[in-house]
Image (cartoon, rainbow, N blue to C red; front, side):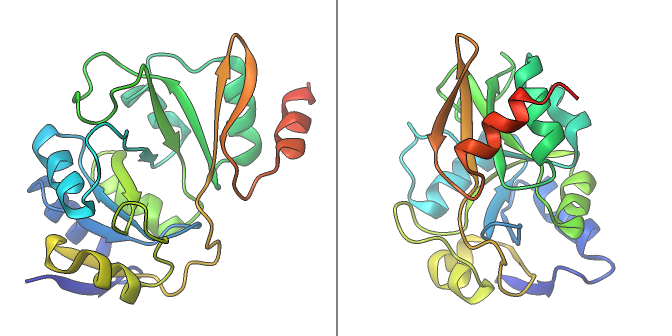
Length: 207
């Protein structure tokens, strides 16, 4: 049976980590929308796909506890991406970076992996307690509107999730901006809270 707990409960991070290390799923608030996460493990990621009824061809993004954790999942962190991370992390920006060869195959069938550092302190604490990197997708059924409250996440995912962490209504309400680089050029993969103009201004900033 699923458990619901305040995301700000003093022991929430360790309790969530204990659940995650059992390859079970946790719903957690972010600065954009609620996410459902697993450790980066093939069986756990399979469980995440099943809960969301998500096609296995679709990659799962990764949330990090901080920029220092990029190397856990990415094989390279090019200078333009570092510049955007410096400007917008923690925050609603997902960077598609070259993925490490040793990641579970079901995390991403692409040559890249999407990574982001969320802007909530208690969410980063949960990720840190679970090792610094989690596979996290929006806490909904695939192709349904994102969940901005814990109640919406529960309606979508029910008892497929072991632990729900309630952080109130997500203030962002819009999934992150996703960008990649092709031949060094910025590509907007998914528009979001950070505008293309702001991204290009950050890339142009040499300071």
